[in-house]
Length: 178
Image (cartoon, rainbow, N blue to C red; front, side):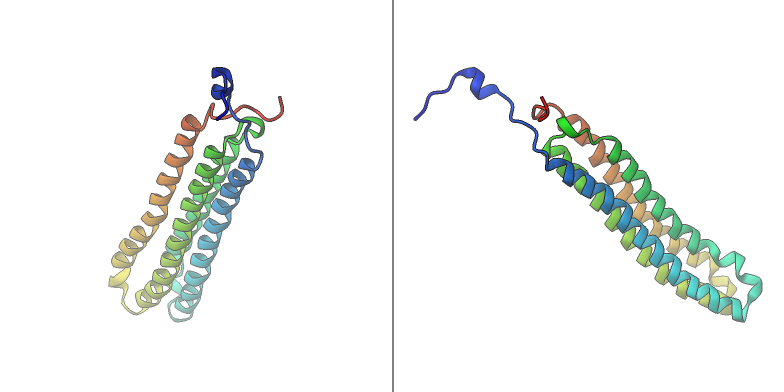
């Protein structure tokens, strides 16, 4: 068994340069997956709105709400990507921070993707049903709000994870460019 001095045992390891890869993967997954959800929700709802426009052109502007709600999901991904990107400092970026930022990006991206799918399906069916029975409008809006809340929950958790990584991930390793 080898004997080590106290200074050797307490010496910090150098930061792993690959941690930056995981942080940037969190940035890209947040924006890409959230935009996939927004695009799907917009496209699927747009098909229903086009169908509604043939039957009831007077209701088209009122039925744009699912498209707007789907577009907000892309903003969730953008906000998260910008925040995570601002916290990546290459030489002193720890693996803990990289993995936490990856988790934050995937959380926001996947929950926005799921919310976009729900908004698209509900928006398509809702605007078509609204064309036949205008009393269904309030019910459709309530369902869309609950679908949007799924993306908002992911945004909140992702931001909490990304912000706690800043405090807990600092000082775990020494910069690799020294």
